[in-house]
Length: 146
Image (cartoon, rainbow, N blue to C red; front, side, top):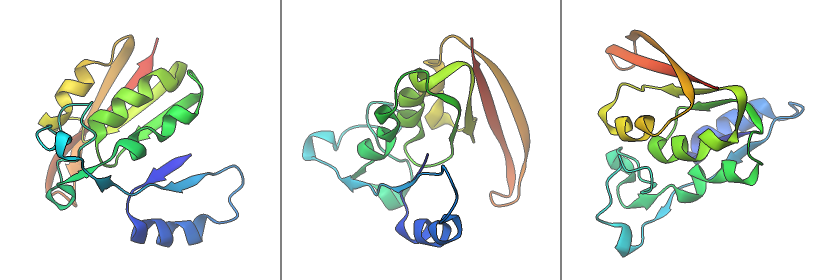
């Protein structure tokens, strides 16, 4: 399963993926925030917010919780490289099998520290390298569930 928030990217990729056996590709756009959620911070895994200014005032609760439709210890690998990553991290950890891998792109960003500190019972490997799109360096972490 793969979850996408951007309708334009979804349509572009979905046309290329149609007919791929066993692949489920979902479009789950963000929803307007309720007033009670307006004071939340994107680094809080319970906020379902993105730090991207384009999505200010929107919730990614439905997007981040798509994985909850699957039983615990269902996946061998989960890759997190989208919006509301702290929330996605929190939802993903219980869905990985023992020996499963949680891959978090750009894991060195300060907004993800709080959520990554919650990842318990995993070994962690960090990979740092140049990122042409960002014109700089970034890190990807792979957590392996014990």
